[in-house]
Amino acid sequence: MSKPKGDKQTFLFAFVILTVCSMLLSAAAAALRDRQQMMVEFDRKRNVLIAFGVDPVHEDGTRYTPEDVDRYVDEFIREVIIDADTGEIIPDITSADVEPRLLREKRKLPLFLWEEDGEVKRYAFPVSGYGLWSTIYGFLALEDDLATISGITFYDHGETPGLGAEVERAWFRDQFEGKVLYKDGEPVEFKVAKGRAEAQYPDMIDHAVDGISGATITGKGVADFITRDFKKYNKYFETIR
Amino acid sequence: MAIAKKVITDPLSDNNPITIQVLGICSALAVTVQMDTAFVMSLAVISVITLSNAIISAMRNLIPGKIRMIVEVTVIASLVALTDQLLRAYFFEMSRQLSIFVGLIITNCMIMGRAEAFATQNPVGPSLMDGLGNGLGYSVILLLVASGREILGSGTWYHLQVLPEAYYGNGLAVLAPGAFLILGIIIWIQRTISGNFKDD
Image 1: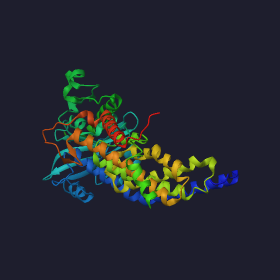
Image 2: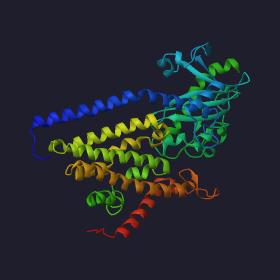
Image 3: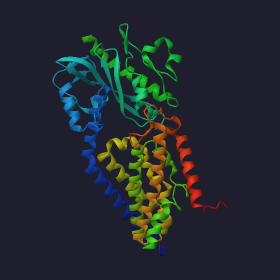
Image 4: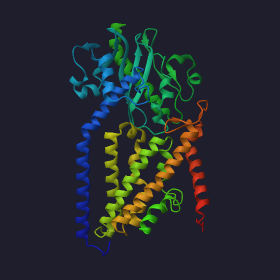
């Protein structure tokens, strides 16, 4: 800033600095994309494990590596795809074979089966929908009665830290365990209370959980989309129930 | 050499960006619930402010005065975006926990402040030192606040159990008001020791 510069130089300088900065960022984004994608994929798989009740941490406190997660997935988990219209399994394909758009629109539904000794012990499926600001993504696992929730996780969202983002905390998620999504022959309307579930929904405490203070809309969103997504899968569940 | 040393050590105590200038406290409150987030945030801020000071200082005679601040923000924002990309690729879990606060380093007044006040008027070497010093000064406070909050709030320090298991954890320390209280106490201690702060 030694001497004043003319408009021409100002424009030239702005042009050069913006070009350099954007080239640099584009290059970085392109170079890191594969690895970021891999981490996102790893995080998804890890969250399927968490929904199934596996704590992805070794006994010595270190976290599972992508290899550890893959080993689990290969050993216990099988993915099948359900056609949302017919409620039937489409044989011999996984979500990698399905057009991403159909997965996004939930016309083709991935279902994860936890198998031990050839028997399906638990079921897990992705759930997603709007909270307050953003789409929340998670996985929900059911016991083999196809009604009782055995675990839930949320792995991606843009809710407010400290308020809506609390959905990913253990205290909120742990409440879902043992609640039901299916009762007396039909799916229930799941509830996330504004405050205490005992106070607001005393008659439906088997399918209601406490809300997060300051995040009523996020909670309502969560309740609505797990109810909605369960109904989609229920078409298939009816055929094996 | 004496000056270079002063440029680094000053921001650690007598001219600390957080406790004396009270800059950058938004993130100091947001990421200090636990040590590990505070630590990664510190590293991110140190690298951004050191590099931004060096780069802006290197261009100081070329930057047109009219768009000076825009250029500074462009450089800082690029560095922050780059840091964010790297965290996503190599520290995925951490980048999820830090969420938007990495991006918000752009708005950390301390970084812009050092670019304006120091890097535009000094050669690259001292500017780099100034950035490093201020980054370290910021980090020291961040880690102190995080220590206080994690120990009081969870009874742990860097996930190591330091208080007896029976300690239930103080909810206040985990929430934002706890950060205000601890930061306030640190500022009080700092200003008592430094003793050179005049409130005119």
